[in-house]
Image (cartoon, one colour):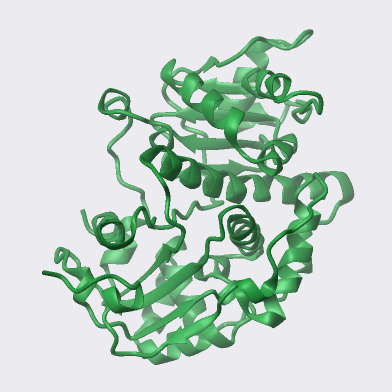
Length: 378
């Protein structure tokens, strides 16, 4: 596989040494030119009163025709504040699925997830879970989120119904000599907990987009408009090629050393390489980072090494540059908290402090397994 296989290899190494450390999943805002949710979708819950269910389905899936969405005036999802059961029932009544098993998996997740995630669902008009969605994304025209069903699959039978098509961005990672990847430090207690962590990270990201665009729909201004302009530097061009396939940025990468990329990342105002994509991704990564830290104490380790391509012995590769906790830097941390507070609809009362959030630059030359605190390979 290549980029995915490399990332899976990195995760597998972390699992071997430290429990369920997870490769962070990155989900791009850019939706397809047309909403091609080709698998027929059905409603996961009861139809809310006085709603045209056929219209709702068309307005969320688009019937592969974005022009359909132009005539849609769907309301935002209302999340009742009485009981979690009522909240889950309301959410399922706005969720379309491609296979029945997805309803139970999503329902189980919703019953156990954090109230912040539940509150953020009030920023969407619908949710689609399908086996042919890859990658997951938020689509401003429908104000809905589209989730890759592989996040929900809990056994081989369910996984076998999910598309095996690769993420379209993977080939970009294969065409350069450097590999930039991120590993989360949180340790899941079980496979189920690992799936919860993945889903909460995914939803924190996509729902941050939704709340950003809902704010713009209501006020004319995106929350992300307040973010500083992204500098035109080495790490910017790395991100533009990896995640957006900008050929001009790929050409410019040849003029930068790994040290240039690492230094520009350290000194820049953006807390994650994915945030160099655009202002929307920057905000989504701020919210994802801060909620993950608050929920589970998660930090992020960013590493830059040679691109192993088909060589999966990643753990012994020497890093050219690495950094843990870019979002923990004092000048960025409080600012990120303030934006997260504005993005999440419910009142936030953070329990963790900035002093608990470690930020450190790792010197070049250390092997990947040393940076991640893993034992040497036997």
